[in-house]
Picture 1 (tube, rainbow, N blue to C red):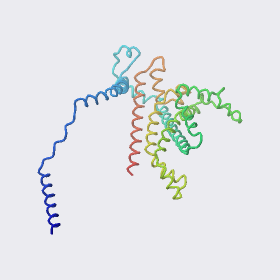
Picture 2: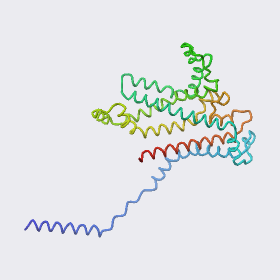
Picture 3: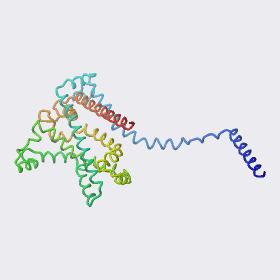
Picture 4: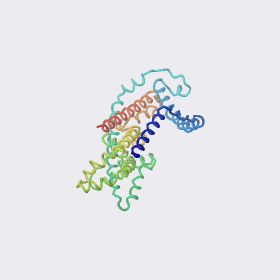
Length: 326
Protein backbone atom coordinates (compact mmCIF):
# COMPACT_ATOMS: atom_id res chain seq x y z
CA UNK A 1 0.00 0.00 0.00
CA UNK A 2 2.80 2.39 0.91
CA UNK A 3 4.59 1.75 -2.35
CA UNK A 4 1.38 2.40 -4.28
CA UNK A 5 0.97 5.76 -2.56
CA UNK A 6 4.57 6.65 -3.28
CA UNK A 7 4.10 5.90 -6.97
CA UNK A 8 0.88 7.95 -6.99
CA UNK A 9 2.57 10.94 -5.34
CA UNK A 10 5.49 10.79 -7.78
CA UNK A 11 3.11 10.75 -10.77
CA UNK A 12 1.19 13.73 -9.37
CA UNK A 13 4.44 15.62 -8.84
CA UNK A 14 5.52 14.89 -12.40
CA UNK A 15 2.19 16.12 -13.79
CA UNK A 16 2.38 19.31 -11.72
CA UNK A 17 5.94 19.95 -12.92
CA UNK A 18 4.93 19.46 -16.57
CA UNK A 19 1.96 21.80 -16.17
CA UNK A 20 4.18 24.46 -14.61
CA UNK A 21 6.66 24.09 -17.43
CA UNK A 22 3.91 24.56 -20.02
CA UNK A 23 2.57 27.60 -18.20
CA UNK A 24 5.96 29.29 -17.95
CA UNK A 25 6.78 31.22 -21.17
CA UNK A 26 10.05 30.26 -22.84
CA UNK A 27 13.01 32.44 -22.13
CA UNK A 28 13.88 34.84 -24.95
CA UNK A 29 16.95 33.81 -26.99
CA UNK A 30 20.15 35.56 -26.01
CA UNK A 31 20.94 38.60 -28.06
CA UNK A 32 23.88 38.45 -30.39
CA UNK A 33 26.69 40.82 -29.99
CA UNK A 34 26.73 42.72 -33.27
CA UNK A 35 29.20 45.45 -32.46
CA UNK A 36 32.80 44.30 -32.42
CA UNK A 37 32.11 40.89 -33.93
CA UNK A 38 30.45 42.45 -37.00
CA UNK A 39 33.33 44.84 -37.61
CA UNK A 40 35.82 42.02 -37.15
CA UNK A 41 34.01 39.91 -39.78
CA UNK A 42 34.07 42.79 -42.27
CA UNK A 43 37.74 43.38 -41.51
CA UNK A 44 38.55 39.78 -42.42
CA UNK A 45 36.42 39.95 -45.57
CA UNK A 46 37.78 43.28 -46.80
CA UNK A 47 41.16 42.04 -48.15
CA UNK A 48 39.52 39.14 -50.01
CA UNK A 49 36.77 41.36 -51.40
CA UNK A 50 39.31 43.97 -52.46
CA UNK A 51 41.43 41.34 -54.17
CA UNK A 52 38.44 39.91 -56.06
CA UNK A 53 37.28 43.34 -57.15
CA UNK A 54 40.72 44.52 -58.25
CA UNK A 55 41.98 41.40 -60.00
CA UNK A 56 38.78 39.66 -61.16
CA UNK A 57 35.76 41.96 -61.34
CA UNK A 58 37.47 45.03 -62.80
CA UNK A 59 39.50 43.15 -65.47
CA UNK A 60 36.36 41.27 -66.50
CA UNK A 61 34.39 44.51 -66.75
CA UNK A 62 37.24 46.12 -68.69
CA UNK A 63 37.43 43.20 -71.10
CA UNK A 64 33.67 43.34 -71.77
CA UNK A 65 33.93 47.10 -72.31
CA UNK A 66 36.83 46.60 -74.73
CA UNK A 67 34.81 44.11 -76.76
CA UNK A 68 31.92 46.55 -77.19
CA UNK A 69 33.97 49.46 -78.57
CA UNK A 70 36.14 50.11 -81.61
CA UNK A 71 39.51 50.71 -80.02
CA UNK A 72 42.69 51.84 -81.71
CA UNK A 73 46.07 52.42 -80.10
CA UNK A 74 45.32 56.11 -79.80
CA UNK A 75 41.83 55.68 -78.32
CA UNK A 76 43.13 52.93 -76.03
CA UNK A 77 45.52 55.47 -74.46
CA UNK A 78 43.50 58.65 -74.69
CA UNK A 79 39.96 57.27 -74.56
CA UNK A 80 37.00 58.19 -76.71
CA UNK A 81 36.60 54.89 -78.59
CA UNK A 82 33.25 54.74 -80.45
CA UNK A 83 30.64 52.25 -79.32
CA UNK A 84 30.48 49.25 -81.67
CA UNK A 85 27.91 47.04 -79.96
CA UNK A 86 28.23 43.41 -81.02
CA UNK A 87 30.17 44.18 -84.22
CA UNK A 88 33.40 42.76 -82.79
CA UNK A 89 31.64 39.51 -81.92
CA UNK A 90 30.15 39.29 -85.41
CA UNK A 91 33.59 39.90 -86.90
CA UNK A 92 35.14 37.15 -84.75
CA UNK A 93 32.42 34.59 -85.46
CA UNK A 94 32.65 35.25 -89.21
CA UNK A 95 36.46 35.07 -89.31
CA UNK A 96 37.95 32.01 -91.08
CA UNK A 97 40.16 31.39 -88.04
CA UNK A 98 37.27 30.95 -85.59
CA UNK A 99 36.14 27.40 -86.42
CA UNK A 100 39.70 25.92 -86.60
CA UNK A 101 40.66 27.71 -83.37
CA UNK A 102 37.54 26.40 -81.62
CA UNK A 103 38.24 22.86 -82.87
CA UNK A 104 41.89 23.02 -81.80
CA UNK A 105 40.84 24.30 -78.38
CA UNK A 106 38.43 21.38 -77.94
CA UNK A 107 40.96 18.77 -79.12
CA UNK A 108 43.76 20.27 -77.02
CA UNK A 109 41.57 20.42 -73.90
CA UNK A 110 39.95 16.98 -74.14
CA UNK A 111 43.14 15.14 -75.09
CA UNK A 112 45.16 16.87 -72.36
CA UNK A 113 42.53 16.21 -69.68
CA UNK A 114 42.08 12.54 -70.54
CA UNK A 115 45.81 11.78 -70.75
CA UNK A 116 46.72 13.77 -67.65
CA UNK A 117 43.99 12.19 -65.57
CA UNK A 118 44.59 8.62 -66.78
CA UNK A 119 48.37 8.76 -66.28
CA UNK A 120 48.02 10.64 -62.98
CA UNK A 121 45.53 8.05 -61.66
CA UNK A 122 47.76 5.16 -62.73
CA UNK A 123 50.76 6.73 -60.99
CA UNK A 124 48.70 7.50 -57.87
CA UNK A 125 47.62 3.85 -57.65
CA UNK A 126 51.23 2.79 -58.22
CA UNK A 127 52.62 4.97 -55.43
CA UNK A 128 49.77 4.00 -53.10
CA UNK A 129 51.54 0.68 -52.49
CA UNK A 130 54.30 2.35 -50.40
CA UNK A 131 57.32 0.52 -51.79
CA UNK A 132 60.93 1.56 -51.04
CA UNK A 133 61.95 4.91 -52.56
CA UNK A 134 58.30 5.73 -53.33
CA UNK A 135 58.60 9.12 -51.66
CA UNK A 136 61.72 10.00 -53.64
CA UNK A 137 60.18 9.01 -56.95
CA UNK A 138 56.97 10.84 -56.10
CA UNK A 139 58.98 13.98 -55.38
CA UNK A 140 60.80 13.67 -58.72
CA UNK A 141 57.47 13.52 -60.54
CA UNK A 142 56.67 16.98 -59.17
CA UNK A 143 59.53 18.60 -61.12
CA UNK A 144 57.49 19.38 -64.28
CA UNK A 145 54.87 21.09 -62.13
CA UNK A 146 57.43 23.20 -60.26
CA UNK A 147 59.32 24.45 -63.31
CA UNK A 148 58.32 27.81 -64.81
CA UNK A 149 56.26 27.34 -67.96
CA UNK A 150 58.77 29.22 -70.08
CA UNK A 151 61.43 26.70 -69.04
CA UNK A 152 59.17 23.72 -69.77
CA UNK A 153 58.11 25.13 -73.16
CA UNK A 154 61.71 25.91 -74.12
CA UNK A 155 62.82 22.43 -73.08
CA UNK A 156 60.15 20.77 -75.20
CA UNK A 157 60.98 23.06 -78.13
CA UNK A 158 64.54 21.77 -77.95
CA UNK A 159 63.50 18.14 -77.52
CA UNK A 160 61.18 18.31 -80.54
CA UNK A 161 63.47 20.37 -82.76
CA UNK A 162 63.45 18.95 -86.28
CA UNK A 163 67.23 19.11 -86.79
CA UNK A 164 68.89 18.94 -83.37
CA UNK A 165 66.13 17.57 -81.15
CA UNK A 166 66.66 14.63 -78.85
CA UNK A 167 63.41 12.94 -79.95
CA UNK A 168 64.42 12.86 -83.61
CA UNK A 169 67.88 11.66 -82.63
CA UNK A 170 66.29 8.73 -80.76
CA UNK A 171 64.07 7.98 -83.76
CA UNK A 172 67.05 8.04 -86.10
CA UNK A 173 68.87 5.59 -83.83
CA UNK A 174 66.14 2.99 -84.46
CA UNK A 175 65.88 3.74 -88.16
CA UNK A 176 62.82 6.02 -88.19
CA UNK A 177 62.73 9.12 -90.37
CA UNK A 178 62.86 12.45 -88.51
CA UNK A 179 59.55 14.18 -87.85
CA UNK A 180 58.92 17.92 -88.16
CA UNK A 181 57.17 18.12 -84.82
CA UNK A 182 56.86 21.90 -84.54
CA UNK A 183 56.97 22.98 -88.20
CA UNK A 184 54.48 20.56 -89.75
CA UNK A 185 50.71 21.24 -89.64
CA UNK A 186 50.22 17.53 -89.11
CA UNK A 187 52.25 17.28 -85.90
CA UNK A 188 52.25 20.75 -84.29
CA UNK A 189 49.03 20.33 -82.29
CA UNK A 190 50.10 16.87 -81.09
CA UNK A 191 53.44 18.33 -79.97
CA UNK A 192 51.89 20.97 -77.72
CA UNK A 193 49.44 18.38 -76.35
CA UNK A 194 52.35 16.11 -75.36
CA UNK A 195 54.11 18.99 -73.62
CA UNK A 196 50.95 20.06 -71.79
CA UNK A 197 50.24 16.49 -70.65
CA UNK A 198 53.77 16.25 -69.25
CA UNK A 199 53.24 19.48 -67.29
CA UNK A 200 49.81 18.50 -65.92
CA UNK A 201 50.52 14.93 -64.77
CA UNK A 202 52.05 15.95 -61.38
CA UNK A 203 48.95 17.96 -60.40
CA UNK A 204 46.68 14.98 -61.08
CA UNK A 205 49.09 12.66 -59.28
CA UNK A 206 49.19 14.78 -56.11
CA UNK A 207 45.43 15.36 -55.86
CA UNK A 208 44.42 11.78 -56.69
CA UNK A 209 47.07 10.34 -54.36
CA UNK A 210 45.65 12.48 -51.55
CA UNK A 211 42.19 11.12 -52.35
CA UNK A 212 43.48 7.55 -52.21
CA UNK A 213 45.02 8.21 -48.80
CA UNK A 214 41.57 9.12 -47.45
CA UNK A 215 40.00 5.76 -48.39
CA UNK A 216 39.88 3.45 -45.31
CA UNK A 217 42.14 0.42 -45.68
CA UNK A 218 39.76 -1.94 -43.86
CA UNK A 219 37.51 -1.75 -46.92
CA UNK A 220 40.27 -3.25 -49.07
CA UNK A 221 41.04 -5.88 -46.44
CA UNK A 222 37.37 -6.93 -46.22
CA UNK A 223 37.13 -7.10 -50.01
CA UNK A 224 40.29 -9.22 -50.19
CA UNK A 225 38.84 -11.63 -47.62
CA UNK A 226 35.73 -11.92 -49.77
CA UNK A 227 37.91 -12.92 -52.72
CA UNK A 228 37.62 -9.67 -54.75
CA UNK A 229 40.21 -9.23 -57.48
CA UNK A 230 42.29 -6.09 -57.96
CA UNK A 231 39.99 -4.80 -60.69
CA UNK A 232 36.91 -5.48 -58.56
CA UNK A 233 38.41 -3.59 -55.63
CA UNK A 234 39.15 -0.65 -57.94
CA UNK A 235 35.72 -0.82 -59.58
CA UNK A 236 33.61 -1.05 -56.42
CA UNK A 237 35.75 0.67 -53.76
CA UNK A 238 38.44 2.94 -55.18
CA UNK A 239 36.57 4.58 -58.04
CA UNK A 240 33.28 5.35 -56.22
CA UNK A 241 35.09 6.82 -53.20
CA UNK A 242 37.51 8.73 -55.44
CA UNK A 243 34.82 10.32 -57.61
CA UNK A 244 34.47 13.58 -55.59
CA UNK A 245 38.23 14.16 -55.80
CA UNK A 246 38.22 13.19 -59.47
CA UNK A 247 35.48 15.71 -60.18
CA UNK A 248 37.47 18.55 -58.61
CA UNK A 249 40.62 17.45 -60.43
CA UNK A 250 38.94 17.37 -63.83
CA UNK A 251 37.14 20.67 -63.26
CA UNK A 252 40.32 22.50 -62.27
CA UNK A 253 42.17 20.86 -65.15
CA UNK A 254 39.43 21.98 -67.55
CA UNK A 255 39.64 25.59 -66.44
CA UNK A 256 43.44 25.59 -66.60
CA UNK A 257 43.73 23.84 -69.98
CA UNK A 258 41.22 26.07 -71.75
CA UNK A 259 43.35 29.13 -71.01
CA UNK A 260 46.78 27.66 -71.83
CA UNK A 261 48.59 30.27 -73.89
CA UNK A 262 52.27 30.61 -73.05
CA UNK A 263 53.17 26.98 -73.75
CA UNK A 264 51.64 27.04 -77.25
CA UNK A 265 52.96 30.51 -78.06
CA UNK A 266 56.54 29.66 -77.13
CA UNK A 267 56.56 26.32 -78.96
CA UNK A 268 54.66 27.05 -82.18
CA UNK A 269 53.10 30.55 -81.96
CA UNK A 270 49.90 28.88 -83.11
CA UNK A 271 51.40 27.77 -86.41
CA UNK A 272 52.31 26.71 -88.87
CA UNK A 273 49.33 28.02 -90.87
CA UNK A 274 47.20 28.20 -87.69
CA UNK A 275 47.44 24.42 -87.22
CA UNK A 276 47.90 24.80 -83.44
CA UNK A 277 46.00 28.06 -82.91
CA UNK A 278 43.57 28.00 -80.01
CA UNK A 279 41.17 30.66 -78.80
CA UNK A 280 43.71 31.79 -76.19
CA UNK A 281 46.55 32.28 -78.69
CA UNK A 282 44.22 33.86 -81.24
CA UNK A 283 42.98 36.37 -78.66
CA UNK A 284 46.57 37.35 -77.81
CA UNK A 285 47.57 37.60 -81.47
CA UNK A 286 44.64 39.88 -82.26
CA UNK A 287 45.30 42.16 -79.31
CA UNK A 288 49.09 42.23 -79.07
CA UNK A 289 50.66 40.11 -81.82
CA UNK A 290 50.24 42.52 -84.75
CA UNK A 291 51.64 45.91 -85.65
CA UNK A 292 48.06 47.23 -85.74
CA UNK A 293 46.41 45.57 -82.74
CA UNK A 294 42.69 44.82 -82.78
CA UNK A 295 41.78 45.27 -79.13
CA UNK A 296 38.03 44.86 -79.62
CA UNK A 297 38.08 41.53 -81.50
CA UNK A 298 40.82 40.22 -79.19
CA UNK A 299 38.71 41.02 -76.13
CA UNK A 300 35.67 39.42 -77.81
CA UNK A 301 37.58 36.17 -78.32
CA UNK A 302 38.66 36.27 -74.68
CA UNK A 303 35.06 36.70 -73.53
CA UNK A 304 33.93 33.81 -75.72
CA UNK A 305 36.63 31.69 -74.09
CA UNK A 306 35.35 32.67 -70.64
CA UNK A 307 31.80 31.72 -71.62
CA UNK A 308 33.08 28.42 -72.98
CA UNK A 309 34.88 27.65 -69.71
CA UNK A 310 31.85 28.58 -67.59
CA UNK A 311 29.50 26.54 -69.79
CA UNK A 312 31.74 23.48 -69.82
CA UNK A 313 32.20 23.67 -66.05
CA UNK A 314 28.44 24.01 -65.47
CA UNK A 315 27.68 21.03 -67.71
CA UNK A 316 30.28 18.89 -65.94
CA UNK A 317 29.07 19.87 -62.46
CA UNK A 318 25.48 19.11 -63.46
CA UNK A 319 26.49 15.73 -64.82
CA UNK A 320 28.36 14.85 -61.63
CA UNK A 321 25.45 15.95 -59.46
CA UNK A 322 23.06 13.81 -61.49
CA UNK A 323 25.38 10.83 -61.12
CA UNK A 324 25.52 11.24 -57.32
CA UNK A 325 21.74 11.37 -57.05
CA UNK A 326 21.31 8.02 -58.81
